[in-house]
Length: 330
Ligand code: RIB
Ligand code: CA
Image 1 (cartoon, rainbow, N blue to C red):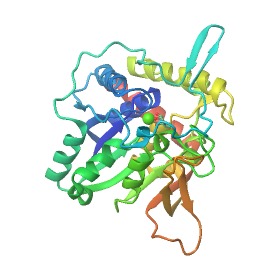
Image 2 (cartoon, rainbow, N blue to C red; image 1 turned 30 degrees about the vertical axis):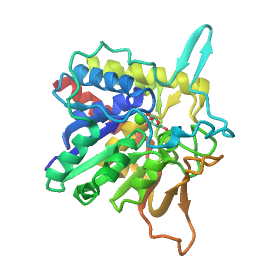
Image 3 (cartoon, helix red, strand yellow; image 1 turned 120 degrees about the vertical axis):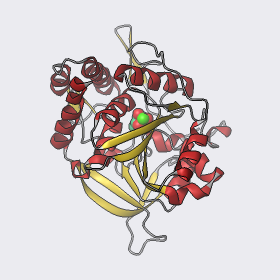
């Protein structure tokens, strides 16, 4: 089967790390490059973390450093003044519990970033392509929003976009919004209204696609350095989710970004995917960053997004484990 060419845009953090590993290992994906963005952590951290994962894999995957700030969202100091933001860390028995440390707990990177910026790489590569490259974005959409504004010619050169982000009945950063979209809502709206084919993998699906301690232990038993690292990331996430954002299954975590990457390979791990009109609120108030699904008939504007409302958890976890097991062939 012909491999699908992808560029993976990340704000590496712990679940981005698992997503990178899945993208690098899966035989149906040709991971051309990684582009980093400010999100879970500042871009120096997300870039170093991405390089650390590339070194852990022992693969020569180019990494391009991206935008250090959202397009405009953080220019307004009082933005989000009224919105209660979910805590991203807690202290338990003197220990800091958080989803993502400042740096992943794997060896410091030895490989270096590419000279070109992520936005320049996206524009140059897409313009020169045959229109056969899929973008998978699992962090704030700043790099894509800036690239689309800088050179709109690339839009028709993108095969499709798979995005981890948003939520209809589920928020996490605020009662109303998911982190990736909330962090740069203007960029998200630019991407959502670009006319590209978009599959959105929101919290409605990722919060079903959780991994338990027992399943993390099964991954650890694959017993490769990559699998052990994935299990370490999972265990850290489970502890953080239990403390900060308990899932329906106690002792579990959603590796959000890995679901988006594996859904790009096999969409049947998702279900209830509906073509919807989805826009992003960037008004700065309580609903700032919310993905607004228009369920009316007719909608104000044409449908623009395939929205995955659910996930087959067991099918996803099996696919995740099978993919991580390919690390034995490294
Ligand atoms: O809301 C979940 C998303 O925010 C994931 O991509 C996670 O890595 C963070 O970026
Ligand atoms: Ca992410």
